[in-house]
Image (cartoon, rainbow, N blue to C red; front, side, top):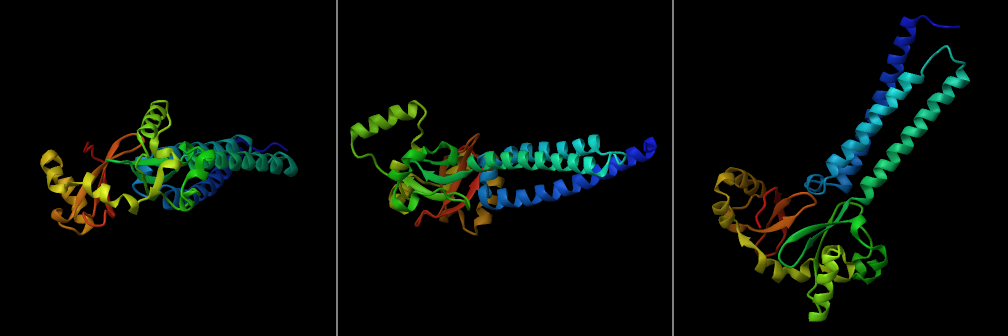
Length: 257
């Protein structure tokens, strides 16, 4: 039996509203997973994780309830209506799983000290067939946020030349497991590359207040901090370090090259 148009629209809005609430709850749980584990601060900004996640979730959250709004009709036999809703839910779940899979493979896995700067390497950039050439402790991709590693010195000029040509061809040095070593192994080189924060404030006098806020967040005085520039996926950042241990203490979106 056909329902009055007013009841039909009311039912559709109600069903779409319920679907929207469920979708938002699932999106919230997905956000906790993505931003607490795969893209912790500041990598959600450095690696573009926030934008990628929002695109995936926004499309999924909006389209699911819209399709429910279009197909929901109590005049349909219950078995048909149930089938339609199940199909909508399965399509939405599949789309969300695909989107989260894309976010997962693009996640940052290492913050790499790359001879004179920091850079971020992402899981999608690392050749899986080369992982066996990494030190044993670095042969698995982290799932709980990026870890610190460094690049070892080149064995000789031949290896340096080959690595340079490979980088020009698109094989970034930071994504080569055969060059990875522990972060601690490069502590002396990191300290040598680091510069005093006082010089940063002089160079960027117009952003002194923002720099002071980052310094205050570390609980250190400017004299107890050094910095090294960092290359992000879409922008340049600055990493603040302990001058003795090279411990990473803070990040700032500032091109300090």
